[in-house]
Amino acid sequence: MRLITDTFANQLTDDEARDAFTSAQLRTFITQQIRAIRNQRGWSQEEFGELLGKPQSAISRLEDRDYGRYTLQTLLEIATTYKLGLVVEFVEYQNFLWRTHDMSAGALQRTEFSREALDPLCSDGPAMRVVPKPIAGTVTEASEAARGPEITKADATIDQPPINRGAAKRAKAARGLEYALS
Image 1 (cartoon, helix red, strand yellow):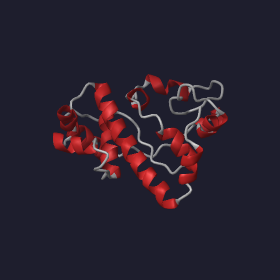
Image 2: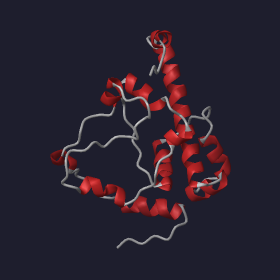
Image 3: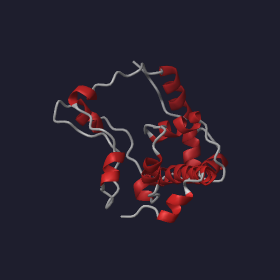
Image 4: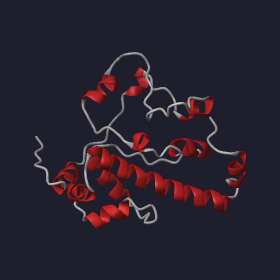
C-alpha cells in the first residue's frame, strides 16, 4: 500500500513545505480525534464542555483545525475527561506520516481506561508488544518498524511517579464527579 506519492515525498524535502504540512496534519489529527472520541462517547459538544468545565464554544474551537491553540494542560484535561492517556513525543518523519494518515472515526476512537486492560501488563507471560491499534491492510516492513520495540518481561516493570492527588481531585471536581481518596 502506497502511503504517499514520490512527488509528495520530494515536496517534503523543502523545510517550509514540510513544516506547513506537519502543522496542518497534526492540527487536523488532533481535532478529528477529539471529535471522534466525543462522538464515540455519545456526548454533544455541550455535554463534553460540562464534563471538561468549559463552555460549548470552547469545545467547538477545540474541534476546529484552524484554531490550533492547544496547551499541554488542555490536552491533559481532555485525556482525563476521556479516561485516556496522552502521549506527546517527537518521532521520525515517516513514523509521523504512518501515525497520522488514517483519520477515519474508527481509527481515531479509543477505549476508556479499564483495570482489565492492564492485566496483560501484569503477566509473567511471553514477550509482548505495547503498540497502538494496527492499521488494517498496512502491515509492511515500514509499519512494523514504526510500531517500536518489543517489551519483554524484564522491561515490563515501569517505575511510576507518585500520583499527583491534588491534580486528580481538581480534574474530577471539574467534571462534577464525587471524589474520595483513601
